Image (cartoon, rainbow, N blue to C red; front, side, top):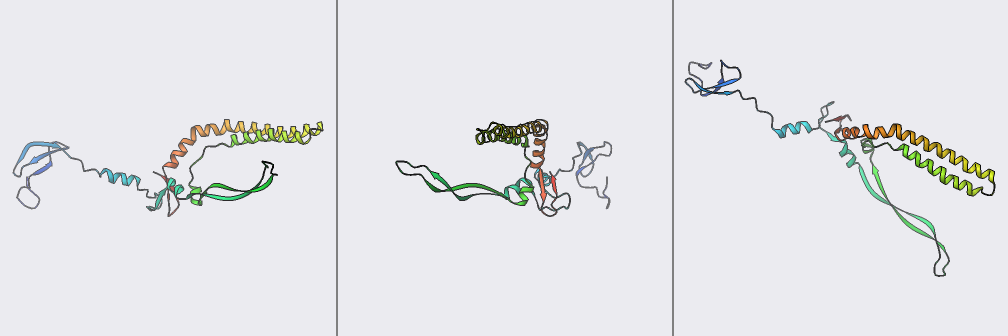
Length: 214
C-alpha cells in the first residue's frame, strides 16, 4: 500500500478493508494487521444543537427567526388592573334614625388584551347552548313572575303576560339543549383537546405574520 504522492507508505491508521464491505482494517505503517473494526458512522450533531434546531422557531415561510409562541404573545399582551367607581344606594335607618341615600365606592377587577393577544388567544370550549338555557329559564321564570305581578287583578292580562315569557323561555331552553347536545358537546369532547394542543405548539412570525406549528 502506498500513498498517492510517492512511494512512502501511508501512516498507521484505520482504513477501509478492501475485502470486507463496511469494515476497517488497521494499517501499522508497513503492513496490514489482523485487527479490524466496523466502519464508524459520521458523528451526529450534538443533542443540544439538534434541540436548538428543532425549537429555533424559524419561520418556514420567510425564514425569519423573529418568531414567538402564541402562548407568549397572549402572556405579553394581557394586563390586569382594577377600576374604581361610585354608586348610590338607600341605607335603612337604625336606632331611630331615618333612612337616607349614600354613595358607595366600588372596585372592579379588569383584564385588558392587546389586539395581537386577542388574535392569538387559545381556543375555548363552546358553551352557547348552556347560555341559551340559562337565559330561557330567566325569561320564563322571572319574566312570567313580573308579568303576573303587574296584571294579577286582571286574569286575561295575567295569562298573556305570563304565557308570552314562558313560551319564549321554553323555546330558548329547547334551542339551547339541542345546540349543546348535538353540536357543542361533541366538539368539546373530540375536537377541543386537539385544537388546544395545536395552539400550544404554534408560533407566529413577527415579520410576515404567518402562524405555524413546531
